[in-house]
Amino acid sequence: MESKFESNETAVTEFILLGLVEAAWLKPAIFVIFLFAYLLTVGGNLSILAAVLVEPKLHTPMYFFLGNLSLLDVGCISVTVPSMLGRLLSHKRTVPYGACLTQLFFFHQLAGVDCFLLTAMAYDRFLAICRPLTYSTRMNHTVQRILVATSWACAFSNALTHTVAISTLHFCGPNVINHFYCDLPQLFQLSCSSTQLNELLLFGLGVLMAGAPVILIVTSYIHVAAAVLRIQSSEGRKKAFSTCSSHLTVVGIFYGTGVFNYMRLGSVEASDKDKGIGILNTVISPMLNPLIYSLRNPDVQGALRRVLTGKRDMA
Figure 1 (cartoon, helix red, strand yellow):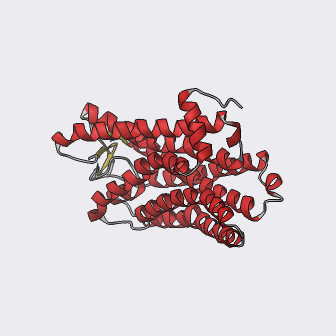
Figure 2 (cartoon, rainbow, N blue to C red):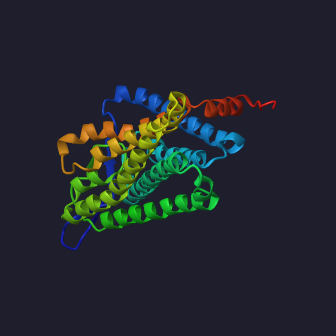
Figure 3 (cartoon, rainbow, N blue to C red):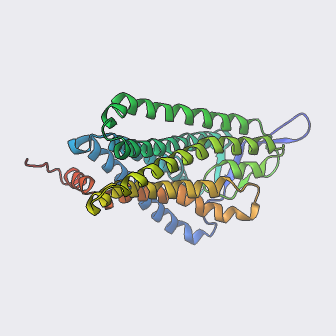
C-alpha cells in the first residue's frame, strides 16, 4: 500500500519480502527445514543456559557470558525466522513499514550485544590465562554485570541510530526486498532519497561496533598465545588452548559473515548471496554455537547430560 504526498509522489507503507525461494513447490520443504532449525537452535541454546544456571561447576565468569550468549542466540533467530515461517504459512509476503523497522532495530540490537559480549569473553580468557593471580578480583560479579550492561547500552545506541536514520529516508517507488528479513543494505537499495549519509553512518558505526572489538579480541589472544607457549607441559598448553578454541571459532563465524554482509553495499546482483549470508548469520551461527561450546568441553557435556536426563551428581 502507498499513501499520497502533496508532490504527487507516493510513500511506501509496506514492503514485499520475497523470502528464500519463489517456487511454490519448494516452500513446504523450506518451512520444515527452518522450523526444525529454529526448534533445534532454541532447544540447544536454552539447554546451555539451563546447564549454566543449575550446574555449580559452571558458575564462573566464562560460563556467565556463555549463558548470556545463548540467550542472545535465541533472540537473534527469533527476530527473523518465526516471521518468515508465518509468511510461508499464510502465503502473505507483505510486511508493514513499521514492522520492518522494528525487526531491523531488534536485529541490530541483539547483533550489537553479540559483538561486545564476544569481546568480554576474550577479555575473560586474557585475565584467566595471563593474570591468574588477580583474575577473581578483576572479573568479579560486579565487573561481569557491568560488561553485560555496557554491551546492551552500546548496542541500543547503535540500533536506535540506524533505525532513526533509515526512517528519514523516502521510499516512494519499488518496495520489493529480495530477502527473508528487513536489513539496511536491502532498504538502501529501495530508497528514493540519497543514502550516502546512511552508508557513511553504517561504515563509521561498523568500525566502532565491529572493528574496535576485533582489535581487542586479537590483542587479547596474542597475549594468551604468548602466555600459553610459555607453559612447560604439553598437557597444560592443550588445556589452555582448548578453553579458547571454541570462542575463536564462534568469533570467526560471527565477524566473517557480518563483515561480508555490511562492507559491500549497493550490489543488487549480490541479493541471492545476501540470503546465504543471512542464513549463516541468523540461523546457522546460533544453531552451531551450543555444539561448538560443548563439543570439546567435558564440564558442559556433563552438565547438559544432567539437565536433559534430570539426574544430578551423587557426590
